Length: 316
Image (cartoon, rainbow, N blue to C red; front, side, top):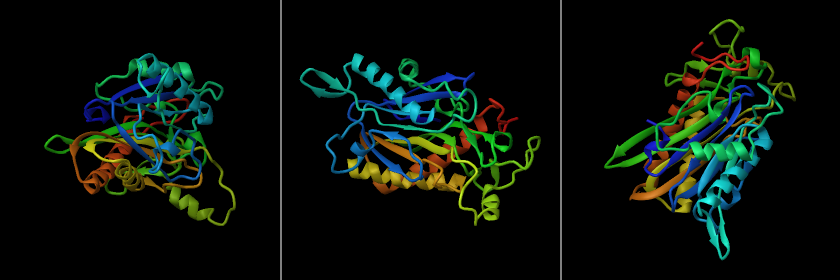
């Protein structure tokens, strides 16, 4: 079960496996209310201020997740072009302005650093968007992801993009789509590390990023600064802008459940929340289960990833 279990949501990937980068677009049905919560110390975002309460724009047309660091934000231009061609966006007397918030992750340290998601790739992701179950693993924004990269690619584990959803009954649903490129390790439901910093390039045993941080806790600088977890939670609940922002905030608890440590100064952890407005619902319940699907999506991402550009996956 994936993000497209939410009626009206379409998801598309554009992937360059040779360069180890890509982007993912989430196309929203008309009237979708959005919010955002940003926790890491190194975010790369576009059009996020307008999602906060007390700002004019209430609805969004799409969300973009991309690799390429700040360069990847240009992929949103292609999403805007696609939506403008469809006549979708904030209306004004001569046309529309598509509302496309975006977040990026740093994948320039694997694959080809000089190939990044651009407008053409964003447009291609829109063309591929569908309501089919979302492809997971080393695709789209998850193509160049890694986990536990504190000591470089050789000891890291391949990250990726993952999704999960829950049916809360009577048609009410909550789902998540997360690109996992975390500094910290990914842990399962029991707290066991399933992806992260490894003790040796040829082993499946993990060193524990937390323990490494303990050993360098008096050092003023970190060896690496190229990480983040970005994603989207969505529901078909009817929520206002304040409530959707609360859902985004509560969903970050799922990140903290599945990634240790989370929200460091060198992560850009950013989660968007979407509410399509079909079913009246309790925001507390939606937020609580949003955290659950975020944690599951993160674990699905690393379980689905494949080895790429010299970074070994859990499956390998």
